[in-house]
Amino acid sequence: MTTSAPVLGLADTLKTQTQAAHTAAERHEFQGRVLRGMLGTDGYAAQMGQYYLAHKALTDALARASADPRIAALIRSYHAYPQLFEADLRHFGIDPSSVRPLASTQRIVAEISAADPLALLGFTYVAEGSTNGGKYIGQALRRALNVPNGEGLSSLDPHGEAQRERWHEFRGGLDQLKLEEASRLRLIAAADRYFAYVIELFDELSKAFPANPANLPLTR
Ligand code: HEM
Image (cartoon, rainbow, N blue to C red; front, side, top):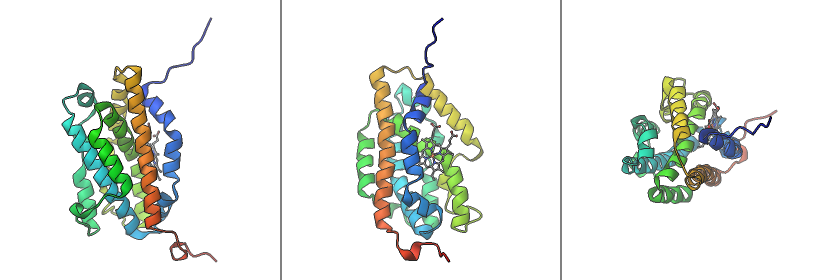
């Protein structure tokens, strides 16, 4: 009897292939300082403003491509939530229209605007997938920023109780796509690229908010 290794579906392939990038993003020192409240609300708001611009570019591009059957099969109206970012930014006294892209965001916005539907789905995998961790990030920030009711944190948890169900539906939709190998690789490459963007963004934000002794927790 011969056995063959199980073939991963697209959703599991994406998860497996981007695991190292996820760990790098999750453990990035800028992210760590934000989560520990070391930058107050400024660091978080700066990060959110950049996510807002990328989110808007992505959801606008998905809307333009909505007639494509692969986009129509996977993308739902609840995947677009710029209004949550806008409310959060306003909560921190930032006019959403005043947010300017950093260089990394400028690059990804340009790439999103020129992307084909499969690349858009690869970008969306990462952006949507990040809402799984967003829930926990929101809980950490409630404590770190002393906002027990989560004011200004709504864009981290756009799906609320429907999170798991919607994420499973999206993953299922990925697995149902009938793609030639080249198309599948293009989608996976776009997911890699979006993770790379997030790391580039954190690197930029890290320079904009340099660690200094005043930011370090007091030790005895
Ligand atoms: C402190 C930061 C982060 C934490 C604690 C975190 C945590 C998590 C957790 C708990 C999951 C769910 C895993 C599961 O149910 O299997 C997840 C999934 C995911 N996260 Fe994060 N995450 C963080 C940052 C990020 C960032 C910055 C991105 C990219 C923008 C990201 C993208 C994803 C993706 C794409 C998934 C879906 C993986 C899959 O099931 O295919 N995460 N994250």
